[in-house]
Each structure stands twice: as C-alpha cells, then as structure tokens.
Length: 113
Image 1 (cartoon, rainbow, N blue to C red):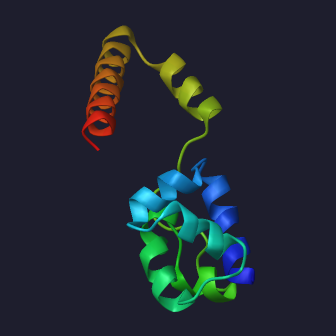
Image 2 (image 1 turned 90 degrees about the vertical axis):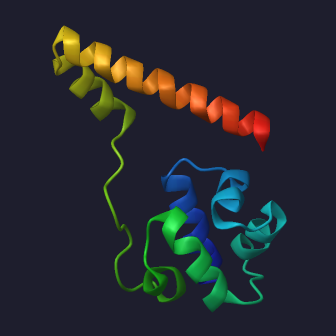
C-alpha cells in the first residue's frame, strides 16, 4: 500500500499523469492505477521500472528510505520565468528557439506514437 502511495506522490510532484508515467516506464496506464491503489503484483520489479521516470530510488519507493529525488532538480514555473527574465536578448532568443524545437519534436512524437 505504501509503495503505491509513494508512486502517486512522486508522479504528482513531477506533474505527470498516469498515462505519461505508463509511457515512460513501458507499463500500461491501468497497471499504474493498480500500483497506486496498493495492488501491485510485483512491487520490486515495478519499482525498478519506475525509478528512472519518477527520478527516485528503489529504496524510497519500496520502503520510504533512501533518496526521494535523484538526478537534476526540476525547476518550478516561477523559477524558469525568473531565470528567463534575467537573460539578455540573445540568450532569450536562444532559449525560445530551443523550446520551440522541443515542442515541435514532442508534437511529432505524439503524432507518430
């Protein structure tokens, strides 16, 4: 039960839907729902599949110990806006071009997938 609660907690913290987590972990959305309801059939294996997309550790997912957050910390919308506002014009253009490319690539992936 706690495993499922922690999966949901991290997913929500990362602003991810069950469908997005399912896609990133090669599981079905219904399986993510089962896990979050405390009905995981193979929690150890499922934890291994979920640590990367949830950016956490197996120990934290299974037992509530170990690192809750691994990898780079995601910036909040407010932090991103503050950083963007502090940039010069050329840097803003570069950031805008990068975001535009990412959005186009994401749109292509969704159409193909």
